[in-house]
Amino acid sequence: MRMRPTLSWTPTEDWPPGTTDPAPVVDALSAGGVLVLSGAGISTESGIPDYRGEGGSLSRHTPMTYQDFTAGARARRRYWARSHLGWRTFGRARPNAGHRAVAAFERHGLLSGVITQNVDGLHQAAGSESVVELHGSLARVVCLSCGALSTRGDLARRLEEANAGFEPVAAGINPDGDADLTDEQVGDFRVVDCARCGGILKPDVVFFGEAVPPGRIEHCRELVRGAASLLVLGSSLTVMSGLRFVRLAAEEGKPVLIVNRDPTRGDLHARTRVALPLGPTLSAVAERLGIPVDDRTAAGSPS
Image 1 (cartoon, rainbow, N blue to C red):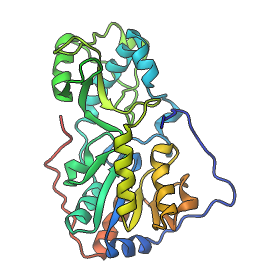
Image 2: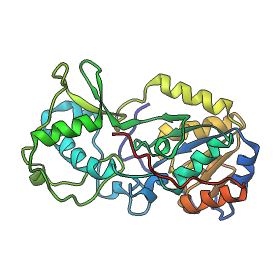
Image 3: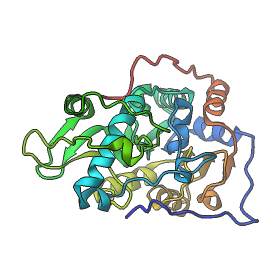
Image 4: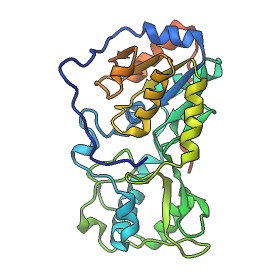
């Protein structure tokens, strides 16, 4: 499976309309065995924009592809300059009501697991434990030569030392952690190499144009097959990485429920789409279920 940065779709006139009644979500959670599939929309209330919603970053920003990143030093300089600056904001993001509600559902035994398309670590920061990071995590860095893993915090300190005085003002932050910078702002930003072997460092995330590891996909398929229902939170399901699990759930006869304000590519396979904001909606669902939502945010994204 390969992700394409400009993939888009347009719903037809007969696309199923959304509802503002979250009762089907309450019923599914009451029955238990719910597998959550989350996308960028669940993190917007934490200050991280999504790709395709209203004001989504794809309207102004094309994410770095794996092919561009590995093709040359200039592209990597541009990526790491923008990502280093973006991490200062991205790494400080905290879980919102949606993440905390999902963690509360898990604590009360209503979920069979969480698959997230996000790379921000906010589900874990909210207390969720059974999380599969489909696209990896920005909090980790991997060497493309020796495979060594290190923390993003360590890399950030090395980049700070190599680029003293690098303080451009970004036009915005994107879901992949990039900051919007001009070539002039990037300037002669210095990239650091693997401390172990001198190889190329890359965030431990699946770039657009890169394949999700087959073993990870198969693990997610097994989770779908073992779940009672699939609850999609904040994903447009535009790319196949998430849509494939919705299709599998439908093929397996599992109810699919979606909470997303805008139409999604998976609506035709869903029992319902609740067209409401995630945080308030999931908080209201938790209240109906009599489940307290822990509002503590002492844990942050991994660094």
